[in-house]
Length: 145
Image (cartoon, rainbow, N blue to C red; front, top):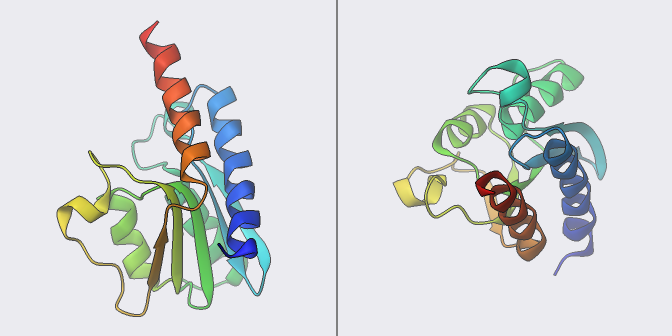
């Protein structure tokens, strides 16, 4: 496994833990360009009362603002959970170069729909998947109590 992918996914997990402690679904994301983090984000749907405030959407917006442009070419998104179709659509429009995610989402993930990311976007899954899934499982187990 690529050591850079592990390092940056750990940074996304730190964001997911922030969401967890804020009583948000614990998904975190970072956007990296030239081995440097330019955006950090986590779910804010509860805090903002906004169903579109997913970690990926927040990270895309932050990275675009940082770059002063709408396209994220030469960027990699690290996210702890497989993006949903909304986020995958935004990633496609952003023309991001690479997406790396941790845990798969068999219920709401974009892979189940057949949606494709941008043709130039490469995809890698399963990086620190167990850690990502464990945080999500713990969050939802606490919600069911």
